[in-house]
Length: 225
Image (cartoon, rainbow, N blue to C red; front, side, top):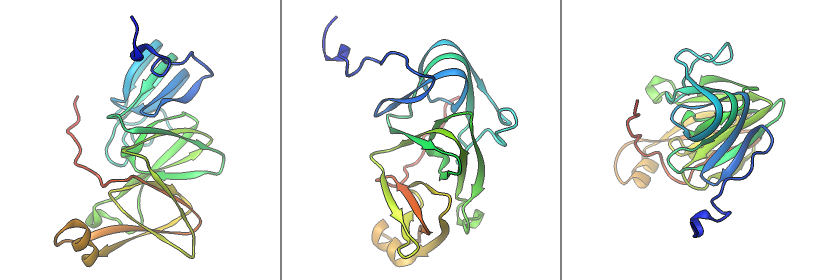
């Protein structure tokens, strides 16, 4: 068989070192040699001797809960082999975390991560249940974190002198060192949303970056079991 489908553009690369890598803009590959963690349902292909385990109460002692902030369950992938991970053809990115780094990310943007990373689920300051309960996962440690984003994200520098305001439905993640608070605006809500109602923006101040997706959150499809 011949054709563009079978060109090097689409052919998977030969296996390299263990760990996470970008296969293409829409898919990550993880060469497993031991274990790793991913969102349930993210596996699109795999080969080798791998086991996939759903966990309702966490994996070992590291995960306090087996769900991210938006209720997306995680799975452990154990053994030796390769697994390809994607989510609804969203763009995929790898974040290289070093000792001392702490990154806050919305759970719906988490695709996979190294077992060397730890995380805890937190409520964003000022966003209790009455504010919609804006939950996020704070990752720390040394390792790689795979993220997904609908479209090409914007990475906006934040400073103490010039805070950044982002739509809570569009934010992907930010440096944990940043100070956060929620702001409501009736007038902005009317202008941007085409009617009455309050718009809620997340204000970030300090030294770091915030990652924003180029669209507001669309309604989730029901998860299939």
